[in-house]
Image (tube, rainbow, N blue to C red; front, side, top):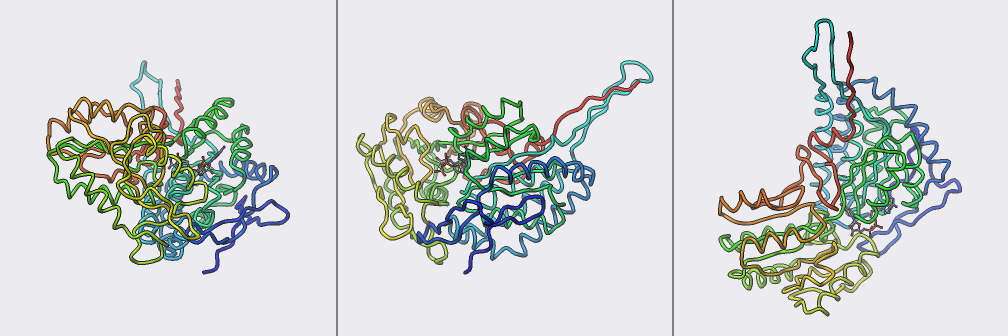
Length: 476
Ligand code: NAD
C-alpha cells in the first residue's frame, strides 16, 4: 500500500517538506523506508503556539455539549476509516493486525469517553457563611496543553492525549513519536474532519528534545502530558518546573506478577503468554518479573517456555503471526544487551535469547529462569519480548520482591485466596493492580503510576481532571 502523506498539522494547515529537515520512516518488519517525515522548525513551533493561544477561547466557548458532539463524530470517523488506519499501525509500528484493530476501537472509545465526561466537569456551591454571600467553586480548562505520545500504541496514545485536552476545553499541541507519524495524523485528522476548529489542535514532529525544550519554555503552554521513559520524564518535569506547568507523567514500569500455588497453572500461563508477548513486550504495563511460588515454579517455567517457543513470529499482516518485530532498530541492541548480561550473571535462557535473521527488527520470545536480582534486567525496564522468572516461598517475600524497584506502574497477582487478595491490594506499591487478570487499561479507568513511574493519571475522570483547574469565587 502507498504510505499516506506525512505533514505537520499547524493552525489547520498541512505543512510538508518545503525546505524542512526530514526523517525516514521505516517499516520495522522489512527495514524498508516508507516515507520521509518533515520535521518542525522553531518558526513552525512558534506558529503552533500562537494558534493554540488564539484558538483556545474559541474551543472553550463552544461548551462541553458541542465539543462532545465533535468528539463523538471523530470517534465515528475513526471506526469508519478503521481498516486503513489499523493497517497503518501494523506497517509503522509492527504490531499484529488483530491487535491494531483492537487499538483502533479502544481509541474511538477513548474519544467517546471524553465526549461524555467533559459534560461532568462539575463545580460546587459552598454553604453560606452569612446571608447574601455566595461562594462557588468552578472547574475551568487549564489552557493550551502539550502532549508527547510514544510509538508503542501509535493510535491509542494520541487518542488519550487529544481526547483529555479537547474534552476539557483546552487547545493542544501534540508531538507524537516520529516512528509512527501516519497513525497520529489519522487520529488528529478524524478530529479535524469532525469539526475541531483551526488552531485548536496542532501536530508537530521533530527532534524530540528540541521540540520539548521549545514548547515547554513557552508561557503559552499551561500543562504537559508525557508518556515515555522515566529518564526523559525527569528531564521534562525539570523543564516544566521552570514555568510551573502542570504535569502528567506516565513513565516506565517493570511490572511484577505474583503467582501463588493455589492457581490453575495452565490457565495462568495461557493468559501470561498472551499478555507478555503482546506488541513484542513493548508495553509500559507489560508483565515482566514473574515471581512464582516454589511449589509450582518448575512446572510454570517449563510451560512458559513451551508456549513462548511455539509462538509464530513474523510480519503482523500474516494471519498466523502472534508477535511482530520490535518497533525500531534501537530496540534490538537495547533488549539483547539486557538479556545477554542476565545470562552472563547466571540466568538460564529457557527459550529465545536471540535476534531472528532477516531484514526486520525481530527478536525471539524469550523466557529467562532463576534470574538474580543483580542482573540489569531485574532492575531496568526491558521493554521487549522477555519474561523474567524467579521463585519465592512466603507471601512477605513475594511482596518485598514486587516492591523492591523504584518503579510502580502496574502489578499483577494470581491466587484464589480471598484474604491474600485483600492483603495484596493493601501492600503492593503500584498505580494499577490486576488480580487474576492482565486487563487493566480501559477508557473509564485511571491509568498511571506511583514512585518513579510518574504521577497523575490518563483516562478515567482523573484524565479529565489533569486538564482542569479549580477557581473559587465569592460574591457578596
Ligand atoms: P526514547 O527514550 O528515545 O523515546 C521514547 C519516547 O519518548 C519516544 O516517543 C520519543 O519521541 C520520546 N522522547 C524522547 N526524548 C524526548 C524528549 N527529550 N522530549 C520529548 N519526547 C522525547 O526511547 P525508545 O528507544 O524510543 O523507547 C524505549 C524506552 O522508552 C523504553 O525503555 C520505555 O521505557 C520508554 N517508552 C515508554 C512507553 C510507555 O508507554 N510508557 C512507550 C514507549 C517508550
